Image 1: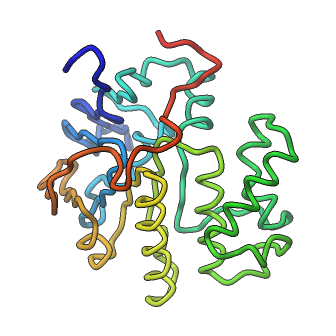
Image 2: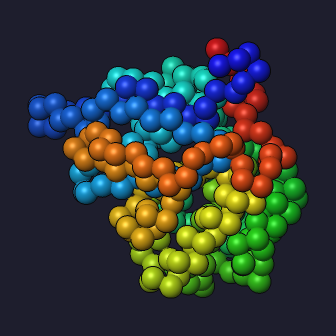
Length: 258
């Protein structure tokens, strides 16, 4: 790699994960190696117990590996202090879960603003950003509605807008359409592809939906804590299909690397 070349967005290097259960060590992940480039879309599939969600949680820095490293832009985030890791997560990663985890007492607009408010961002600027994102995902007419007033598909769109509000380098989605009917799921899947095409957003989606997994440019299959196969449906040739993004992913700007 030349001095000017950027490292991959994410490198998962020899990751193991063990838990203690009733005094016995249980191996969940066994030597996971995976490289994710900027702008990629990949699915992670496998039977229950394969380690998919554990891998997503470790990749999202919600848990740490027992052994191995997670590198973002060439920096080993597993060596960060808990406080620095939390700041990195807030600045750099977006999450979409099956249950959506929207706050019921807040409007759609306020839910999307929440990550920025936790970070101490200016409310007016966050509101403009959140409104633009909700409009982009087709919910510009639902800004003041609370989650209980939204359909399942609309809640999924709010959760996706919330994941994007701080322009993360990577969006991690765990069964994001698992509770939705097939027609609504298809519209959310189409939205993922649209955002990837137009924004260059990198997506890793853990799913049991074979149709979604088979439609992704890259499909990683897991079994028994290992990667069983890693299939690309086209030759990956660069970070974004429609040209470079206006924003390059960065690590926590408040804390210098090291």
